[in-house]
Amino acid sequence: MSCLGRILVADRTHEVLEQRLREAGFAVSVEPDHDYESLVRAAQGCEGLVVRSKVVIDRAFIDRVPSLRCIGRVGAGMETIDVDYAESRGIRCLNSPEGNRDAVGEHAVGLLLSLLDNIARADAEVRQGLWRREANRGYELGPLTVGIIGYGNMGQSFAKRLGGFGCRIVVYDKYKDIKDFKDTKDLEVVGLAELQREADVVSFHVPLTDETCHYLDAAFIEKMGRPFFVVNTARGAVVDTEALVQGLESGKVRGAALDVLEYENMQADSLGEVPPSVQYLMHSPRTVLTPHVAGWTVESKYKLAAVLADKIIDVLK
View (cartoon, rainbow, N blue to C red):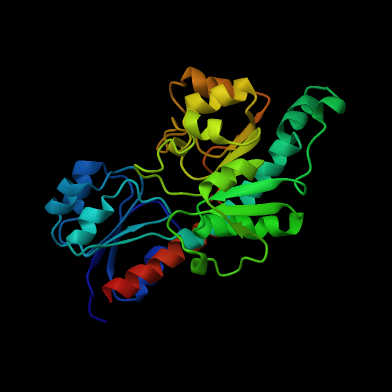
C-alpha cells in the first residue's frame, strides 16, 4: 500500500489511534513531548497533526506548517487551537467528544449526588472516627429542578442519565433550535431567564470561548431565583471563582461540585501556587472537587482515540 501522507501524533493516547491510521495507509510518528518550537519543526511536511493542550496551535504555528490539512484533538476542548484561522486556510479541525461523553455524563451525576448527599464529607469524617449522621442529612435529587446549560454531547449525556431520578430537567442552549432536541420527553427546552428562575441545580456543558468565559459570574448568581447548587465538568474558567466564593459565603450558592478549576494547570500533576479563592473551595464543606477526570476512564481512553482516528481517515483519505 502506498503512503497516503504523514501524520504526527503529539499526544499520549491509546495505541488504537496509531494502529488505525497505519492500517489506513498513513505514515505515523508518535512524539508526545514537543514544545512549541520543536513541534513546528517536527510537523514540517505533515498533512495531519494530533495535539494535546500542551501547545497552542495559533496563527503563527499554522502559517509555519503549510503542509497541514487536518488538526486533531483527542478530546472535546478546542480552545488551544485557532480553529477559525485554520479552517480559513482549508485545514479541518477535528475532536472526539463522542468518545468521552458517557464518562462525563456519569461523572457529573456522581458529583451531583456526592454534593447533595454529603458523600465526600461524610467519608472523610468516618475515616477520622466521626459518626455525624444528622450533620450529613442530604437532599434527594427527585424533587429538584436541574438546569443544563449547553446541550451538545456532554449536556445530552448528563440529561440522559438524570432521566431515572424523576427530577425536572430544563435545558438552555443558545445555539440550538427546538428541532435540534431529538428527544424532549424527559426535559424542557427553556430560555436562560426561565432556567435561572426555576433551577435548583445548574450544570455547565459548554466549550470555553470568549462568550462563555466567566459565564457564571456575580450577575448570573444574582439573577438566580433561589439558592442553587453548581456543577461544572466543562472548563474551569466558565466559572468565575471569586464570584462563586462570594455566592457560597452569602448562601446564594448552596454548594459546588467541580471537576475543573479556573486556575488548574492541565500539564502538571499539582496546582502550583493556589490562589486564596481556590483555597476556600478546597477547604469548604460545601464543595466536591475532582482533578479534571470527568472524561478520564479506561473506556473513554480507547473511544476518544478510535473516534478521532476514524474522523482523520475520513478527511485525509
